[in-house]
Image (tube, rainbow over all chains, first blue to last red; front, side, top):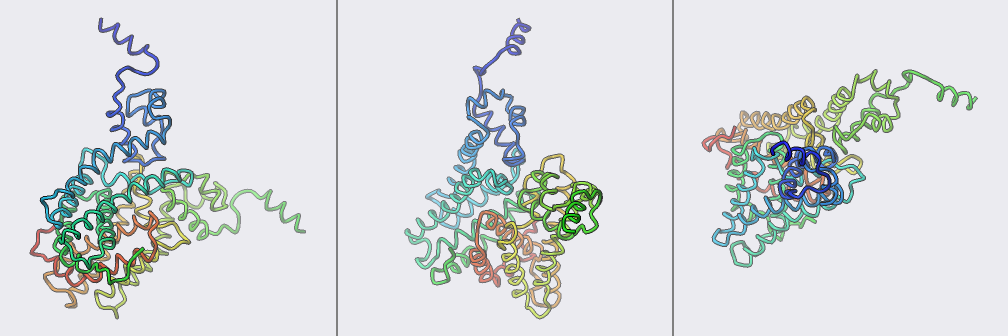
Length: 220
Length: 220
């Protein structure tokens, strides 16, 4: 009986009935995150997911389609979770920002996954021929800064931030620190080290909000 | 006469007499910087430098040797220049830091070269087989943070910074902002946008030095 089942699996052709799309996406996500878009070959993806190449083609059309699905999986698994930390209505603006940064530090340094931010890691080196992938990553990654700015604006409307605060300049500065944290995590920084940087930033927070004023020269 | 010269060039074999090592390194630097270590093939390097493969092998042994020479060329051309901006003895500590950041922003956004920091761009995606390259990049890149810390310590000894300032925590925070600036430049930020972030950071400087105190928990 066992032998027959083995033979059946080995001889089976076409799309397996039990293709686990989410598990395959998680494996593919790990590969792209660790090695980037171009250095990850279809053969790497076949090996890691355990799916056959025709199955992957049937599900995702091509490598670019698989990458797009992987990007959405990352957003669903990690970005949404961090955004929830930010948006908790019970938190004051400073606490919301701190929660977002701590949650990001935890994600960047989780040893179960590649270090750093998926968007930064996959977009740093792309050949000219991957222009569409580059554009897609840039747009999605930019949405992090937009999320921060929308949060700051919302809290400004509620009176938690001075009306003079330049929420765009402030969100640019905050995103720059997050991006630096991704680089540090990729180079081996621990959660504790990133938390040290967040400690420094949160101590500066009251002055930071005061420094970014709409009277200062706006950055593009 | 002209025809004979052309024939001579076309028929010439072996190492050309006029191999311009520095020009070849500059071309190779641009390729590695834009596309990373692994996505840059020997054939790309041959095309870009105009040198024949045997010439490159004779000069640099292999791709790794060429990459090592390229890394030193980058340090010689760009890192040394930024360190000079930092170390100007006439500048106060804040001015030294600001000069270093402005010089770095100029380097990251110079349209004549690939955007961002060479070390970050080339080290973000490396396969497990490039462990030695990864280690080399990490060590050299870490020296930026050490340069900043040495500068802060030197100015602390001169009394320009309080004895209570945790120069290590401060240099970690500053490096994090620089690393974020590299990511932003890579994603298309202009010099003006990076200067806006530096404006914010320099306005925070007096509080920043005060916030990083040796009494706070040291990060590793």
